[in-house]
Image (cartoon, rainbow, N blue to C red; front, top):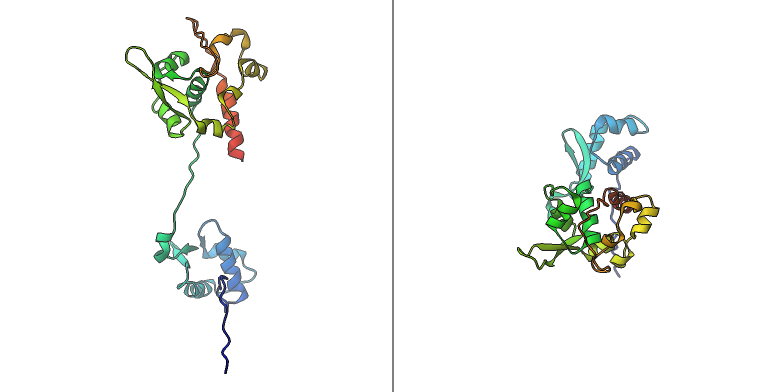
Length: 232
């Protein structure tokens, strides 16, 4: 007698000996974004049954599987089997909005790099808040770019390739010019000296004693770009 060889596949075999109502309960709990109590499950069923009995049956069916049906604080949900916890890795993305101070600081670094902490504070007209520069460095948008050849040798800061990538820029010279920002209504070009507006890597710095507060609205440009990125 020739025995037939059974072919194996990768299809997950869910419990087969369950009633239509039990299938409904299974689907309701599976689709829920949070654990459900018995009353909530009952309100979604096509007819009334002994829900607790059905839940216990499903719990037994799933007890030896990779996914278990568990009851915590009288609420039911599907969870990964505890003995498989080492295979699971939880990744959580935390979205944080940059403060106005951080965006202003970023704008100054972008258009005046390389620039020192003291120079940033002088341009902004206020001292740094707590961790303002550190936040930009944690995002890897800003990094130390050597030391300035002056007494004390202060660290200078520049933008990174990640900054260009995040704002979809090929190079720093792709940034909007003073005229473009003026046309967009973000700054008042009548009160801005073109010679002090631009990145150190692409323009000759022509600094004088005049210090213009040209960054009060640039944060709107950066904020709008960040908002567009969040929608993607």
